Image (cartoon, rainbow over all chains, first blue to last red; front, side, top):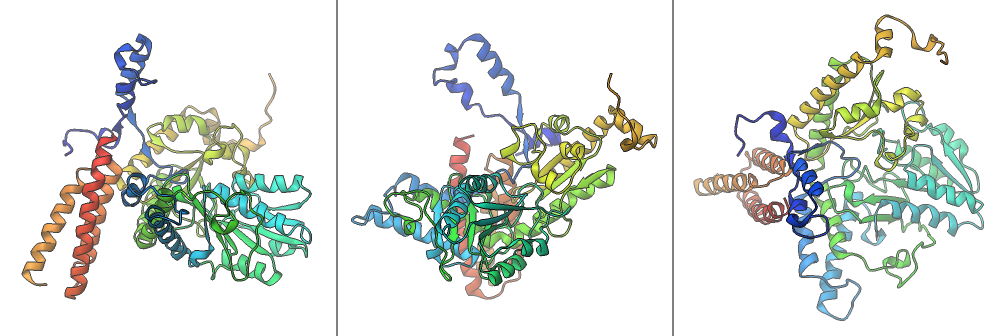
Length: 449
Length: 77
């Protein structure tokens, strides 16, 4: 299968797809394309695809998930809400099986699961829905500064509607201060939203303790568990969570589907965002996409089966990566608590190296600095700013994502490449030179020219 | 384990590895090979014939799944 003469990099990196060359950009045969375009395609044919180390941004679909989805994309295409014929019945049965698979993973009842288009929609529904339903008596919502953009933005919209929002700061290790959290709960607080595992620094919040506090004060607890579901054991009863957002494409499932867990006992009421035919308990109208729901269910059931195996493997690989890098490179900081974390999300800051140039130097490994949603802007990540990282360290941080399909060879290659490139960039850096000479950078008075 | 069952398990293992090698994607291929090997290794000491039979049936279903999934993977590469 693999000839022994090929180097490690050529074995790992795959040729870029030739499909675009056969069809051309608008479906015409390649020979009729203008000369410049053909030349560009020929150059790309030699280009190899990078290694994938960005599992927090998205995950490839597990082949078992695709296998479960295909029949519903091809032959069993009925609308699950059609009550009068076999097409509808078989689709509905598949949808209900998927619902049960999602519920089993988090220890919930199937009637408490609502299918949505993703964790962003689930977050919007939970935050805006709960706040608006209870708005006559309760006008206060609490969240943290390290939440996902969709949560922060939903809270911003609520603020413009007249709600009062508290954005809790986090400690330097990324974890919320429980006393501060308890102190910020007011008699008119309706909802507290804290994400279980952070997507940028991998920190795990103490959900059991937070759930205990919220239950005792009569506040609903919502958690964005998109990065946590299927990776760590979750039980909504143990965590005393009332609402939970789940994302399909973070657990090796399809993109475009997610779920929201809404507790029935004690009942949580929501004002629906999407109106229509009353599907999904009236909370989210619209035809449930059967193939996607089946995919989400299959992904959840596979995750439950493989959780122990994946956890051991991911922890081993993450340790391997961090050990290799920190043993060869000085001045590397891991962002986020070292113990209370999910091993597969490693966020490292390399001092005295510029982040963008490091990412470009590592271009045959698919990595990210900060989260995918904020990668377009030049600002450093707000999560890193919230944990108190210095501006320059925040710019030189890289997030390594390790998942089910990562191999030892990929981790070793990434670590070696990282070490070489960081050393090379530091050699070129005058700041590094000054540090080597023992100058304290903070004491320098930079002058204008 | 009875000799007939043992040879059945070994041939199932070999077939699963052969089919797994056909995945064009490096990540899927290595995962399938590794997972099959680790699963057979973990269950190697099993004696109860009913448990073994159940696992063999599951293995045959997974083998069929791998054969089915290699096709779209090859076509869309």
